[in-house]
Length: 114
Image (cartoon, rainbow, N blue to C red; front, top):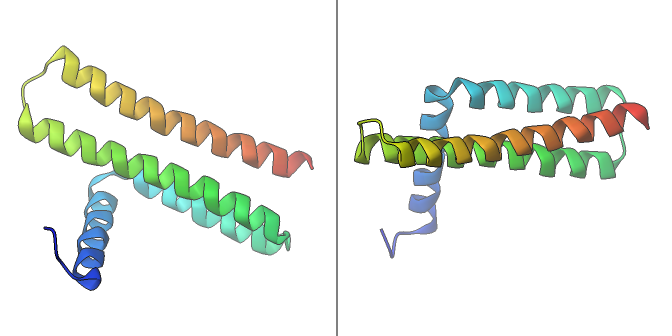
C-alpha cells in the first residue's frame, strides 16, 4: 500500500479502529473507562498536566488493545489450529494490555490521593 495519499491511509487506520471497536469488548470497555476519566477530569476542573497524563495513559491502553487485537486476528487467520507458540504470542500481547491497564489504574490512584 505504499504511495497512498494521507487521506487514504487515514481511512485505513479509521477502519481498523472501527473494526477493533466492533470486534473487541475489552476495547469498548477501555474506551468507556477513558470517557469516564474525561468526565471526572471535567468535573474536578483538573489542571492541564492531569489532562496530559490521562491522555497519554488512555492512549497507551487503547493502543495496546489495538495491537493485541491485530495480533490475535493475524495469528487466528494464519494458524487457526491451537499451537503453543501462537498461544504464547497471544498471552504476551494480553500481558502488554494488562501492564498498560495497571499503569492507568496507578495514575488514577495517584490522582485520587493527591
